[in-house]
Length: 186
Length: 410
Image (cartoon, rainbow over all chains, first blue to last red; front, side, top):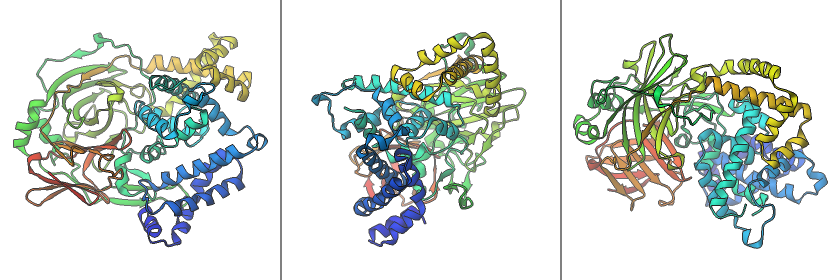
């Protein structure tokens, strides 16, 4: 079913909207949640929570790109769940690696003054992405939004994994410099 | 700011940009889109498949030859060029469009061929509006049998859009390429020409032969990528990406003969920041790190052998503006060849349907449902959409721009 038709169901408060969303994007959102949580049950619950959030958000929202609208909800929910888990349950996992990599772009510990709102930081990040060549942007987002492993990213774009790692390392260095210039403590 | 804050902030990237990252290296630029996305979203997803090189920054002017100033190579004069690339005799001028659904389970994608139609270029507009801004470039660089010659160029600073024409020649023939229904060209074996600004390339069929490919490149300027336009011959002019793995393996074998394990280990350690290397130690064995070092050295050698150091640089003249109109309190700017829409100013970041209505009542449907009458579109600063037209329009005859059903009168 086309996205616009599914969205029309949301606007009509027709519960078939959720059924169709699950049919079309259930697998996609599950994979994204599982890349963060590494647990099938937790990922399934996250997907269910995503449908509830979407139901409550639409209307009045009518997403620009429905798939990514859902991906953002799933990612946030999965990350919140991951944070609330005990260290033992989190395990090694890709999420911890992603955060460790991002830690290199910021100050080791932030003062109260450094605790900037996510929205303001988000605007900065969007502007930073715009400075990057298309492919470097893509690689960065596959890693730090979608939490994909470098081998997966490499296959996606027909690259060598080493090239992906170098691209990420280079981009993180650029991000660190960019954040410094924007007045963030790094 | 914590690392978690940064992770969450990255989650606020625009949906169109996130969706674009899902395109694979083997997908044609604008003709494959994700299932369920409204066709209108292809505005957000059109892009050129660029190779992933970081080209050497050494500019060797000796290898950049300048041809006689004032000469046009592909066409006899600017007017002829403009009429050809913006007119309706390109050989790819009209399409009813089609939609192909891939077998269930194969992927989430559908293949969409859009509907479009080109129109004749108005000779008066060509002569009076555009021709004065056309510059002859006439610069060439060569690499592994290929010669890239940038011929002519026109830039509109009002919308940040431009067009340049170039030829790619090789006496032994041009590597295989594909041409889409609207004339856009792409190379499955890797793009041999790299443009520093975002662009789509269209074949100039009447001027193309087996050994000389003529291209109209519609690009859009992004200040974040530098104040000029650069064109280079990429590593894919030298090799096919299908051969790159074999070549790399051979280079790794060669490197291992000349570099010790300790040296290879240091290559990885010195090439990563402290945190990244600490993470590498946690997830990789020493042997794996050494092997990666060999691969990195082989990659460096690969780049040394196959990356061209020369480039053609075109300064973009900020004074070069076509006549344009501003609508919606400046949120919409329209020139003869392009338009720029600030979605934030319009409180509309969807920008699905875009039409121009003329004073005689006729319309130019730029994007609506499965109709795409443009050559390239891109998002900048998250919610600013720039569209390069597939025709020349008379801005003085614009009555209104209609975006998602909302009319903005001129």
